Image (cartoon, rainbow, N blue to C red; front, top):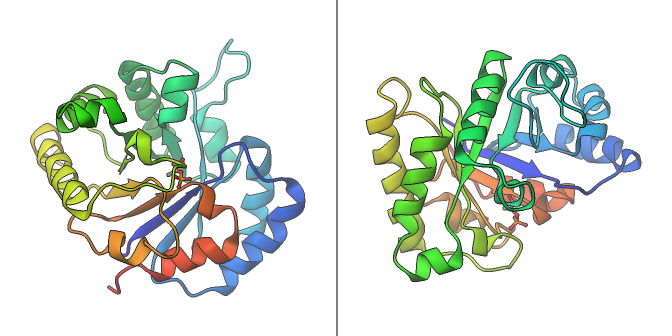
Length: 243
Ligand code: PEP
């Protein structure tokens, strides 16, 4: 299976930049599957610019319910209708800024799957939790409570302290965590657990992508800052192992 390289634009970008970015991605022949996750207002423009390409489109959040009195929220049904195939859920910035709980994230993941979206559920420990030797327990707990029964989608392991900091865990620590995540998924999800892709996220850049993407059980990358420039995003994708 090709690596998945997903770009999380967070609250960045604007309409002016969509055409050139999409064109650059369309012109490339990446070894990896690309997914772009821009802010909500850019989704329709991206859907048009990426039409009939292999490049995936994702949102950065959704509500658990398909419609209703939820001012300011966006349903997975509507995301699907505007052309999304994916949605990032439980990013640490949403867990921190919006107090999202594991249970809420599980509800959103169920809503996303019901609407036909592939959820990309983020998990990861804080620096204090890693220093205390709790990283694997924290992530196992997040997996147990953030994934609905029958979950089928993508997991992104993103240590909170590596996001936007230029710091990454050691290869040994990433390998150990991805192995622990795989074991937990196999135990928790007898159907899909063995094949769910596990992405690494946290300061993935063109110069470290190849070594990170070569690690066992690393099925791709969730990229924040370095996804904003098409050239950097594509350089990261070029670091994916050949299939
Ligand atoms: C992210 O926000 O998901 C992320 C991984 O950010 P960055 O690549 O900038 O560390």
